[in-house]
Length: 291
Length: 269
Image (cartoon, rainbow over all chains, first blue to last red):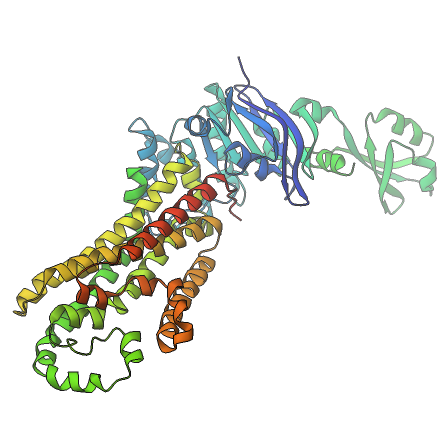
């Protein structure tokens, strides 16, 4: 059985700008796949190529074994898409948008439950809706065709934590139903909560594809250590650690990998106080970007 | 496809109503004034006879029959300039909004994410504008018949039907050119600016062509030369070359627009 989304050697160049430069991704059925990277890394371009908004310079994208260019209409029946910036017809209500989208899918679609779950007022004109409510409408429209695959471009950007959690819940329900989601984000704690695997994209190239568990195992510790006597930085620095800041009587040190060797190195000195903190996913992520 | 056409018409309904009502009001106004002008036609004819021929030609004034007949009067006063100008503005606004406007506003993303091919999307949008053209033209020409009846004016209906057809062809050509521009650009303002400039250039070229013999060839680049309401009324026919020019331009630019829209990258910023 083919993968839900298969991207092979995808390139998209806009003149000299290599927005996406030879990327490969395989997203399996039933997984929630996070696509991480800063602004301009190529996340949105990749998603637009999946949706056939733009034509790749080269490479192929297949969705459920169907070609994204040739079978674009068939593919869009399977995909629910949420753009990074959702725009709507200002003079219409949410309900009018839903009726319009329903016209493409037939009467099988009924967003009543979603409307209820998201506490969305579908009678209000879109121009009077807040950013959060517009995003709710975008989510409702993306899910209306009962898609097998969701392509969500930064679905929680600009939302408050309560709304973010609503969207995480929807995605979890979606995953439980055995469906697939491809979600872009710059928010690592978010993908940590919802994704099975992630790919990190930088300057149009995939720099890492990994599971959330694996990335968590790439340990980074922040050690705040104070000594009874003055210790020079050279006495504790090595390849696996880096002094971030000097503090009164000590240092804040970033230790990559196992912490044991570092602790052994500072054990001979008289320690007044020590605090060890695990780096969060974001800090691990930033570490990748330094490469 | 019907879904998109209905949606687009719904969005454009206010413009269609306002433009059609404006045109209807102008038509009613001119019709109400016609009997008094007709009564004074002899004196007006004398005045117009003294006008330089070039001026009369440039502004579509038939010196002998200008105020004698209702269809002559309307063709000179209303259908020669005001009318094509009004529906050109309506059509430029419609075509500009159809693609470039949707990209400009970002709403094209909703349409492109739906299970519908670009070709269907194109034709849905294109047909919406054609419907606008038909509604406007029908309202603003065929209404002359009941309005004339109301003011007890008798006239040659054929003139109005010929003007309807010729105006529709003119509108189709303007619409097709603007639609192609809409398929190229991502901002409505550019589409409006270029289409507007093209119309002004064509109008000025037609005026210049009638002012000086050496400039007369300029008329061939102007739609206003191929759409001459006064000549249609006088000759009771549409010149075949006008039909060929308008239909060819419409066909070429529509095909180009479809080819561009089907292939172009669409990215909302």
